[in-house]
Image 1 (tube, rainbow, N blue to C red):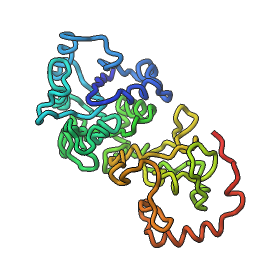
Image 2 (cartoon, one colour; image 1 turned 30 degrees about the vertical axis):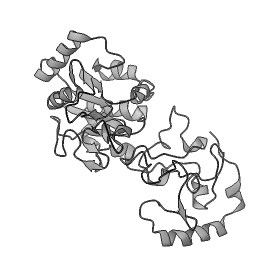
Image 3 (cartoon, one colour; image 1 turned 90 degrees about the vertical axis):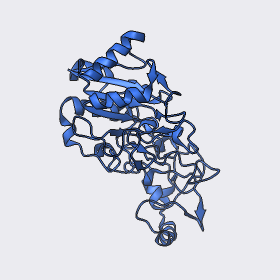
Image 4 (cartoon, rainbow, N blue to C red; image 1 turned 135 degrees about the horizontal axis):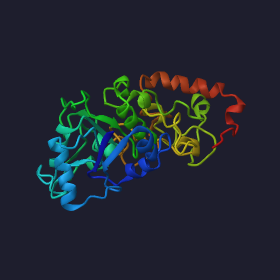
Length: 320
């Protein structure tokens, strides 16, 4: 039996909704097939009041084995580092986290708020929010850059706004079955099995990207979403086009640009002031390019690609 405790800080519950929609495996599969016991969850737990506090203190003392601590939402430290803006079970949530993190064998941060601080941590960050072990792209966060759980790993980050449901359940299964040691984490503590490739991998519009055949409208069935609509697929680490949402589709497959929500800089309002989607360009070349691409070389590539574009690159071959 693997005991899982799920807590929520400064969040919208989006990752809880995503988690409950998991399919491979489902939440029921976690319990029936993999021996996972959900000790408590903010949307599922039955304990309240003194009963809940007793259970949490039993986890801290070791009376109840805490195998996995899952945290959703940012760690709210306001006002002035007290955490009083986010109270839970008669204490600031951050105080429970401090104690429970020392007792948990593994800790999993789910969603952008728990991993990087997310939207609550955007400047000027009045809630003094942080992720568990990062604040945006800077390592440290609430638990500190050197934190290691009793299981020998740092906080396992599963970012996204929300995170894909199957990323969450599959990592819980990997921990419960002892296979988490075989899954490498990248420098941002993300499991490489989901985050070692770019969102562009598997995108049905890659041929349009290659020939600079762009679309300037949302929802169109053809054309690349990068050049005019600011799709961040070429610079975002995720498996959204390999592990489809609802086993069916993804943002780019329905004509919506990737927002880069698995990266610590999300949301990118500071990078593109005054706009959310449209890519800013210099002489037709996007200011922000995929990693490893030089702007001068890209300008030459753009002219050559457009000149070489075959007629079939304009065909509507896209299917949902």
